[in-house]
Image 1 (cartoon, rainbow, N blue to C red):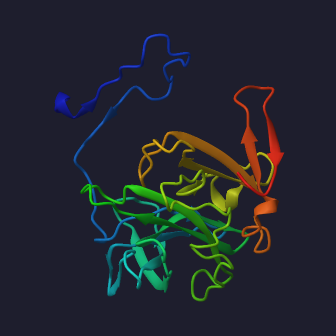
Image 2: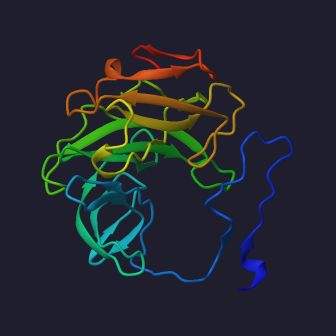
Length: 254
């Protein structure tokens, strides 16, 4: 193997974590498969074994979507197969998500639990600095499907009145923007308490670097997912602490 394709292991001095006894290293082999021209895939493993994922900004089979502009849309797909080199991507459809007063509305956290698909979207803006979606907007909320993406019940929230009441306008910052579910395996079977956990980057400072892919802080939240609780801010708990004495606080604002 070409040694230039081996990922170097250079842990920082004083790292408290031991080297893995199972993984000796990471290398790029060059083996890959191309299935679509779309991006923003966040698969979730259902009880029946299929993976379900959002996607956007591209094409899957005959379906095309783009998450920018007033006709922003996000796609839905099913992923079949166990061999990553030989998967089948089945497009299911797409849904419009009005982004106003922002310029784009993209997929984020997605979860399939007990045959209910929870599909989150968040908003973004661009400035004239030539960067890519360099203003992170809020997590709008979750649409839900009980037939694996064939039909959807839209979130009761909107970009102007998002799930956690945050705004990115007038240089304000959001804490819960591009949120993603922690992967607990098939039908969330690995959850320690039956709750769904989400991680989101965000910030509070007016000077924070906060975009679709960057943020000054990381936030952890959790909820017992049902079609009723997923869009209810009061059903969420927010991590408050950094050691074994840390607790969860229940509040309607992160």
